[in-house]
Length: 422
Image 1 (cartoon, rainbow, N blue to C red):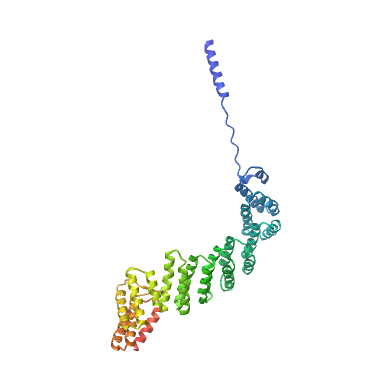
Image 2: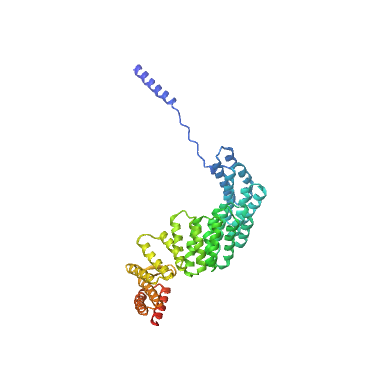
């Protein structure tokens, strides 16, 4: 019995001993967010630069929300001192943006004055003040004053900040009243802001397209040339060229088309992308045909087309060239060959000079009439009459299917009237 009690006691002591030797895990320390720290606590810790930025951004946010802007200014120098130079600009820039977004314009003015006076030798902070003032004028729709400040303070602005400002100004400028301002902004960027390629590219297309809005298409070639001279991205200039180009094509002003041909040649040599060169060449091909510069047309055709389509277009251009050179029989035969090919087309064709799609029968009528005119000028009245009759047949068929091509419809009706009078 005693032995049994002894063994039980020993077992209890052994178990108790094991328990006393176990290591108790300490309770995990409650993890606090960085933004939960007071500023003093945060500064007392070994925080990274990124963490300090987060602390200061949150401190600014809280103090603004509490309406204690004086407290924002109290800690601003500490932020600039403790955070790296570039990151301090980002944090303070965020503060400017927050005030602007919340339309706290009085506080924005106080902040601008404070930073300008407190950090006169910090170029980055001084630039933020300029950006903030222009943004304030833009936000309050005083665009004329914003543009004036952009022009006078541009030397203080980086390419990125100028780009942001220019984009906002151009997006807000609406209607005829702001055309002068838009022109002023674009002209300034192109003429006075060398070394800021992003800003230059941002205005390229809009500046050229302003010529259309202003009903001054004759300004387009010179603006395109100036963009190239200012070393704008050739791809941006190409977009401007193709967008304005179709409008110029419809006007068929020979002097203007010739200028666009010259710009296109210069631009094409600077474009590394084949697709962009092709788009320019297609427009130049249309220009060259209107100008009857068939030597240029033949070269451009080989850039634009290949295979059966190249053969078809070559035939048409060679017909016009033969006619211009006085080779009448060859011209008539090539127009006939072209018509034979056209009869195989299954869909309507696009006319770049009018922007309209037209039925094949209208194209056949046009070419038949052209053949009649050639034969009449050569004294072949009988052959001319037959060609004119053929043209009337095609034109009459075309009228039945023309619904959304008012220019072509008017031209065909006029042509039929003239053919009836022959």
